[in-house]
Image (tube, rainbow, N blue to C red; front, side):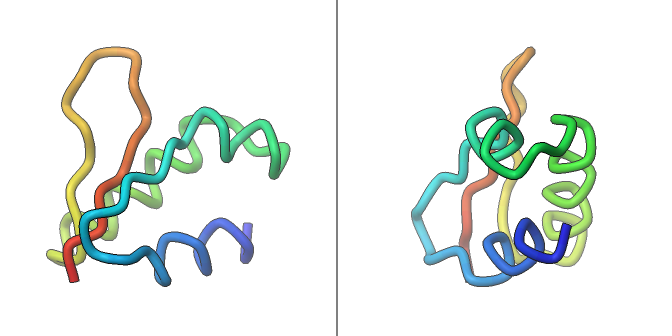
Amino acid sequence: MVEAIDLVDGCEPGVWIDGKTLSASLDLPDFVLNSIFKIYEAKGYGLVSKTINECKYLGKT
């Protein structure tokens, strides 16, 4: 979990993080990563993809 938060926290502006790929490599469920992405989006640090069945985060700060 700490690795996932560190990756999202260190996301470069304009770079997409694919939550499905990340969940497989970190052995975490997609919904956990999507929740982390939504928390960071709510704080204004990035954007979460609104596409159905996608779990992606775009860093903006």
